[in-house]
Image (cartoon, rainbow, N blue to C red; front, side, top):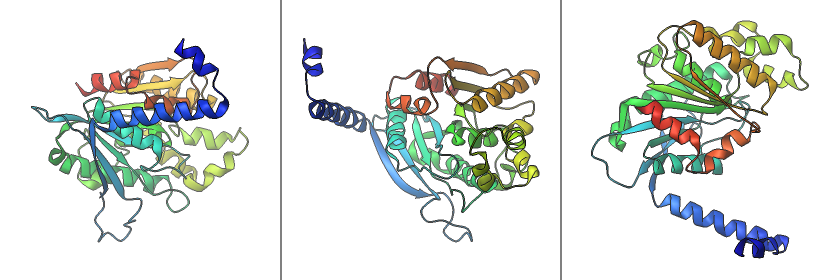
Length: 296
């Protein structure tokens, strides 16, 4: 009966009811985590230090653990020109990572046009280097870092997982700094193919973060850096996502399979691109279960 009474509410009443449920959910989730905000992962003395973008937040479970916890380093999306760790959805993901028993690390990085994708990937590598060096202080296990990214963040996470030639080495990281990687509807896995074809309206906008140089398109595409010995991958694709994401992800899957490391590859029927990240608002979403599997 309560369900039908809610249906009878006027639109304002429905909005208020939804707001109450949302706030109650956030309060309950927040109790299970502690956020350490605005940690600089690049030294302030660095010539390119950005006091706003070179920051990360660490989300720790409040419940004590007998052993260091697995870590998830989350990289946000936003077409390489928007987004940040302080957005509501990414704060919510950080809290839910902690609720699920992880030490969550949610980062910001420099955006286009200030920085192009190679520089953004370098920012992410520096955030990973900070995590490897410091996560023990926050109860995390540096040997069990799972990279996770959605959309543009998925492409950046894939670049870290492949090592992208010297990307990790120049920050003192081994090729296997990441224990595993989960790509959530990743964009940018093969920008050489995408920008060569330019087959969709508005594609010219991506020449800003990726430049007009095909050599950069290739360098910034994880597909061309895959080598045998990569960490385990799990790839989730929305059944109704953009065709370019589904096709490039399939080529990525095929290349990993050719290398003898076929990833777990899951298509979620009916899910659109944005829905692939907003589903993480629900603490019991299947992607959190997959993160636990990858962290083993």
